[in-house]
Length: 217
Image (cartoon, rainbow, N blue to C red; front, side):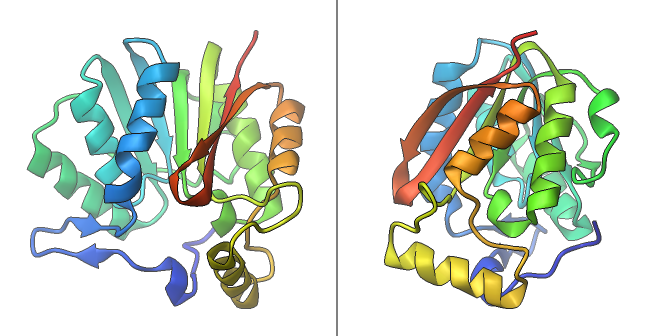
């Protein structure tokens, strides 16, 4: 997958003078996601973040989960620079050098083993085929009893449930008809088809969902 392009509705990060990028939604969602991680994961382990974006999330999680080791990944070189800048600014020592990863390509899941994988705000920005590949590779990368935690906006049983979601989804589809909100039931089917066990669906702020699955073998 080449570096994707999105409509202006999906491109809203602001660059600072020191190279850090700021996403407006992060201050609103990072603490609820952190609370979910600390409640559902163990006290230590290896955490792989897919599509780390600006790097704000992974640094926040690392600061508050000091016994976990975090590996951020990104496809966009500009975002990799922002992740580095956030790690440098925070001084955290439990975040590895960000890795360039196209998670939509097959094969990477067999090269790593981790205890948890986190994916925030990605699936509405990719195609269905890429979504299925990413879930399948995550299943391969997880250690037994490892957990996949997905956060973002989704359709509920095929329906968009707010005016804001309707506008955002339609702006994505108008830009590229392979983008747009995925259905929560479809996501659960893809997760099961990959060999993971759906464990929980958690309502999150701003009409988002977290989907949690576990590798049972």
